[in-house]
Amino acid sequence: MGMVYRKQYTMPIPPGAEIIERGAQRVARWRLRNGKLRSAELVDCKDGKVRVRGQTKAYSARYRDGCGQVVEVATGCKDEVAARAVLTRLERRAELIRAGVITAAESDAADHADKPLARHLDAYQRHLRAKGCNPRRISMLRSRLDRLARECRFPRLNKLAAGPVEGWLVDQVDAGLSAATRNSYREALVGFGNWCRRTHRLTHNPFADLPRADQNVDRRHQRRALTEVELLHLLSVARMRPLAEFGREVLTKEVDAKRPARGRATWTREPLTIENIDVSMERAREVLKDDPDLIAQLERTGYERTLIYKTLVLTGLRKGELASLTVGQLDFGGPVAYAILNAADEKNRQGSEIPLRADLVAELSSWLAVRLSELQDEARKSGKPIPARLPASTRLFRIPSGLTRIFDRDLAVAGIAKRDERNRVVDVHALRVTFGTHLSRAGVPLRTAQAAMRHSKPELTANIYTDPKLLDVAGAINALPALALPDAARTGTA
Image 1 (cartoon, one colour):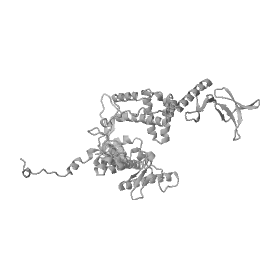
Image 2: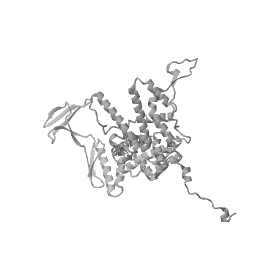
Image 3: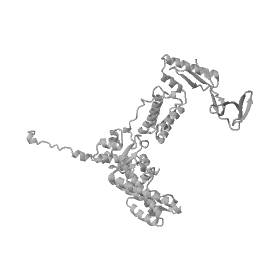
Image 4: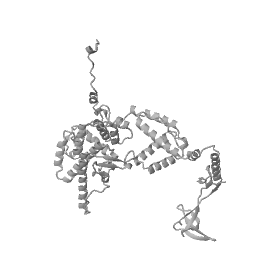
């Protein structure tokens, strides 16, 4: 037979409490923040301290569950009659489990069914944090789940169903949402449903059979690879543009005679191009000749930007992965130099050793020497001890937050179209596509290229991260064996 009761607890004596005697009892009396007077009994604890004994307002219930174990649950009721009604319901459910009418999993799901969905989403978010998921991904998943819960009208867990979601996905097709984005919403729901099933909040995942959209027929953001000539132009522009921006020639604007303009409205700067960037760079040196520190800073910025692009092209690293690399993660001492990518910073959360080519290692070593020189100069100016080496925690590159915008401007100056005639785009991640494409173009076996790209499936390497336009398909056809037709006179045919 179960029972309901109010749990007792102890807490420190509130500051400013008055200690009084009531018969044989000592009582503490104090005022709450709202001005009300409250009193409670004082007790001596095992640690020798005197504390206030209190009692919860809501009742708890103790009973034997369906497995015969004594459990204690909060009823959430301040009224004893209501708390006993909750206890009766819990004991009845335990009897049904023991009789085999329902399962323990169904009983657990019933406990969670009528709770607000937001509480389950909060618990799921904490689970993802404990799992070590990327904070940005957690925020994205929560945002999408909140939107689905709001627009599909899922106030509680027992209202989750696939039907409203399918209707919502159809509406998003009409609204122009891409297949990839629709699939990301579906995957967020499926992941949440699987977690609810594992934690016995649901007996099954209602979204497991939601259909996936075909991304192959609705690719909105197809990337292309850069050619070798385009890469050379891009690296050259990235190296010179920070300084060349200060040497752009001033051009006079045409002014409306009826509306005379003043100041900045009467002139503009000449746009940088691959043809005039050298001249602009020399003009900038002349303009800034009285500020050699600024010239050196701008040249270092261009040097670092060039190395960022080149490292992305020669390693296949993603932008975030490259940003996470520190000096301590570089190993240049062995027969093969490599960078150690931590599992927490990699997309697949496995961790990898990224091999580095000899020419890239030489340039990275020179760059680290520049960084060390900067650190030593700062130490001299501040009077601190001069370091002999860079700290292991020093970031390899100071990747700016606006790298995407910077990359687009470098493309424009280099004369590289953002989109080609097939509407394929060039962005920072396209450098990874360039890496995969040039591996294939060099004849690297697909399995090796897959390992270099760190892909789980070879199809991803071959279909998504290889640009067929740069592959020598005609040359491959010419390599087929020559199949000369037999002479008609020899075969006796007319």
